[in-house]
Length: 497
Image (cartoon, helix red, strand yellow):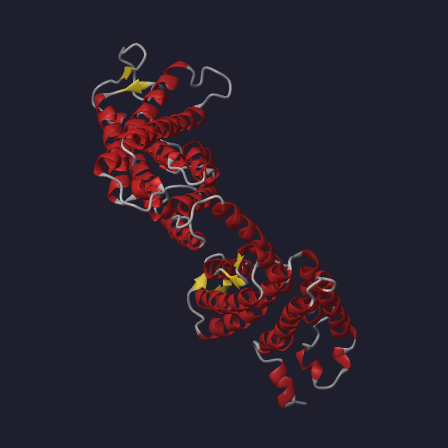
């Protein structure tokens, strides 16, 4: 016997997604509004702290109803699929939400509910309407569905976070909108990513938990990152969203051009996110120049480098150790920037570390292509290509050029201006002095790398190429940081800049 139209509707694709969507607006938003009303009326906060637990209890009761009663109630059991068994979203959905309200703050739990309910239905719909272009990590999902999830989930999360904002970002009773928007986007992206992964754990569990957890971590990160900085700083919450997008694009490019392996690319994207957030797009240009030029130089003359055994392993592809050695110091300089309350020292140290990393890369990758034998930096005696601590005229020229590229980019993009933390335009001589500082920091870092290579690299335990590269970037950072402090002392004390 053919199914009735009612049963056909119940089993149609996306029907339960629409039910989840409707339940959020029919139940979730009213609960949120009730909590807002209680917050206004409960001036003594006698009931408000317990309200999330009451909501969790209500959702737990819904869980029991859906599991044991709903399948036997006519009309309501339309959401029950045939032969579904015990593993059913009709009870996992409210159960996971009840757990969220028990574990996370109300703003995070409600926003996670919005992400799960309002992202899944559009993703399912658009995924069926535009079935082409599958996600590379899951052939069952499409870019169209992923984009629809992010778009609709962002809107619903923004609504909930506006009505019930994170308490960390409220001023004069109103939510700070840049933080609301940033948190909404982060919750939506994290929910879409975890929903798109093909794992056995039900998406009614993983989506709300990951979204709520992302919100809490992001909220405290943004609070730490901005509370110590002066008003009008370039470090704004939306930088975090821009950083994620920029690093996703850069990561794709790195993998396509085979500049690094996958683990190294993921680590580089994480460090790059910190760099973009604190150093803005201007500082990220310096980071991008190191990644692009440094990787390109490693590929240059690869056949000759392979022949004389001076090429990087894996045909020039960088690994995790290389990324840590070259980018950990620049990323830490940016991450510690708030501790100095926006003083230029650490951002300039970041630029010095990047200049040193690129100059060292250029020195070694170009120097091994020289037709003349290099000389050991400590004795100036001729040594074979690839010897630790060897220098050449060609390699030194490459280091000077690379350090100059970073210094010029710092000036051309306005990085030095934003690093100063000053709202007024700095005199040209101050900017020029800062760029010279970056340039010299790159050369000093390269020189230290060569000295350590000639004296201790592979001669002392635990001192290999990675440790020497780390010391190179650390030297560049310290040189630029100390020079910046001295430069600021002169500019502030005698020229009142």
